[in-house]
Structure formats: C-alpha cells, structure tokens
Length: 294
Image (cartoon, rainbow, N blue to C red; front, top):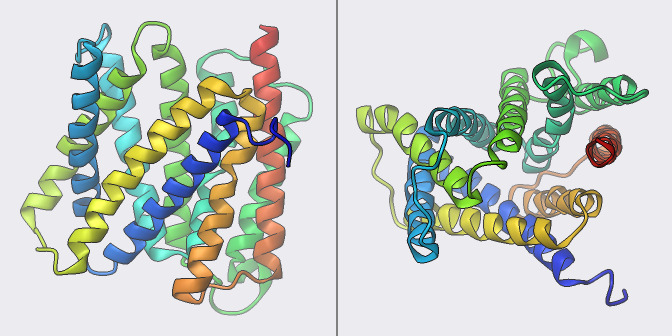
C-alpha cells in the first residue's frame, strides 16, 4: 500500500471505524445486564464532559446561534443512539452494524423530501437494493419459510428506525453546518441525550458491577475517540473515499462477533451485507457528486 492509500486522512478514518467498533463491542458486553438507556446515559454524560472541555479549550460559545434547531438535531441523535444500542445488544454485532449503515438510503429520501434535493436517476433502484439486503440478513419466516425469522424482527425494525433517525440528524447537521461550530453541534447531541435518557435511568437504576464499570468507561472513551478521528478524517479526505473506509467498522464488528460471541455470518448475511454496502456506497457517492455540482 502506497503513501497515498495510507495518508493521514485514511488513517484517521480507519481509526474511527476501529474505535466505533470497540464502542459497539463494549455496549454489547455491558448491555447484557444493564438497561440500554442507562448505557446511553453514561455514554452521553461522558461525551458531554469531553466536548464541553474541548469547547472551553477552543473558546467557542457553547449555546450556538440556532438553539432550537440544535436541540432538534440532538433529539434525532438521541433517538438514533438509543435504537442503535438496543440493536447492538439484541442482534449479532455485524448484522446490527450493517443495518446501521442503511442511513444513506434514508438521507437521500429525507434530503429529497425536506431539502428539495433532486433524486438522481438510478437512486431509487439503489434504495430498493439496499432494502433487499436487509431482507436477506433478517430472512423473515413468512418469506423464506419456517416458523421463525433468523433474527428478532423487532430488533431489526428498531435498527432501521435508528438508521432513519441518523439520517434525519445528518440532514439537520447539513443545515446547521452553515452557522454552527462542529463542537457545538456535538455538545447539543450529548446534552439532549443525557436529558432524554435520564428519566428511564433514574426511575430504575442498575448498579454496574466489576468490569461493567470498565466497559461503560470504554463506551464513552471509544465514542469520543471515534468522533475525533472521524472529524479529522473527513476534513482531510474526499467524502467518497472517507465513506468507503468507514465501512471497515462492519469488518471489525464481524471479527469481534466471531471471536467473542461465536457469531459466524452465513452466506445469506454476507450476500445481504454486500448488497447493502455496495448500494449505499454508490448512493452516498452520487449524493456527494450531486452536492458538488450544486
């Protein structure tokens, strides 16, 4: 691999995929006993503290210029995070991660609906192909025969809803990026997530035990490291290449799932993941080209 392939931006994106996969692994480990909302609460509290410190160091006002829209973005992010964490705990790691990466499909739909962006020729086909990949992974019994689906269909639905909220958050960020500092956007996301997850956490708290404290800390630290690397990688690499490298998270998730949980993807999962990754990658690149042309 030459120096261009392993440029600083590429290394940052690879590190981001690795850290986010570690976050998912830690969530799955600690979520076996602790409620999902409690994990969201601790993760968000840690990241809010990290981001606040970064804002103070950068001397950036924390409340931003459009607090209502920032709060809306934070709400979308909190709902997406809650769904993703639930899916990670209740689905195989690789499957949950692949389903999370359907968000470019919903981003294209929301951008066309809410921002009036034109949907290019062939994008509808890519969207349908991605959804076909979801069917191949979940393999519902009413389509493939048998009395039970391969996966918990409710958890699959939660994962897809989380992907939709991720797309809504992304579309909102695109509007906020014109007027807001990136750290302010992240701070609102973490702050709203703390507020949103606090009622369920405080109503029925479960005290962590032993290594669960380590896993909870790892969730927050890995999420912050992944976010920092992602931000730097996106600043240094073209969006198309950065998007492609981000899919390394699926590979890492498959490795952790196989090594620690015995989750070995079968041929259907590999086929579905290939369809989803291929179609969403092409779709994301088309959206980048369309944005540049505009």
